[in-house]
Length: 461
Image 1: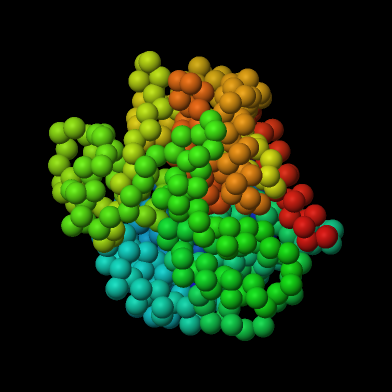
Image 2: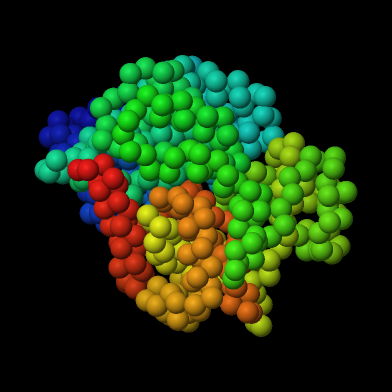
């Protein structure tokens, strides 16, 4: 429960500001939302809802240290509210602070033993430690209490009602910015839950958000079972997702002109030394089902395989051929192009000194030359990539036939596409309000508009 304040008027005004901030956040107006939350905290510094919601806003916009601080304040002032402990634990787990996260999951479960998010969070933690059986026990327990989550439309027009299918295991398509709540009423259904067997809520369209084929094979089966009970149009049918795992993608795209895919082998731990003999060094090792560089290492000439895999969870690991995307100065580039309804849209270019390239850790914010290079890519993709690469990307889009997906890739010296991954789980985050990112706003908004237009057109709304 929220801690009551001595003065009634400031509390009421804080609630009004919190509601206003929530509307701004749902519409993607991050600056306005943050301003309202801070104004609310000035009136009610220990307001649980404000602290929790501000933490979520900050976390979703990659201000993760600040988000953890908000969640920590919420748990400090409201130690008996399990939601604060769950959110803080989730943020700590994402930061790799496993022990601290486990402590807060334990507290949350002591307060609310059946809370599905606490159970799921503990399952995710155990999965990250390689304790698959214990994780599944928590996950199965979480299914019984999960219900359909309804997010009402905040706009004035006729909303498009979208049923979003997700997996409680994770590996879902990030839809926060795709489904603008000024246009859409969103109904979220975990396909493994008991609610998935109940009558479906009214909907105009189904968005299958189960996106990670390496992690979610059972969830894709469950999603297909749900879809057999509706005649609504479907974005990203599970059958098309099913063959987008890293090994499958490498095989499916290998024969396309202008496209280079890595060799990928899935092997049990005890078979890794033998499997590694098929690869030149360096090669890559990763645990299936993880993204954003988690549980992903490079094995060099002098590296011991057993030592390299010690911290990687899972009984099976992926061995991946290293595709060298470095320039003469040793900098790596990773491009991301989105595929929306069969068309290509450039999203970003990340330039980094590290082999493991992710946009949020790349050398972009403090490098005007890198931002200028990215701006050129966003303004005229073909002139930067070359006709051969663009044709290869279009061939990938045609073969995958996904309604919404993305391709992460580099370029070879000959202008070929070096495929890192291609799947539906690619996230689109609007850029921060910093003026340095003004050149990115138009291209990002174009992708979001194209996605929303496709959804509304398919739904007939």
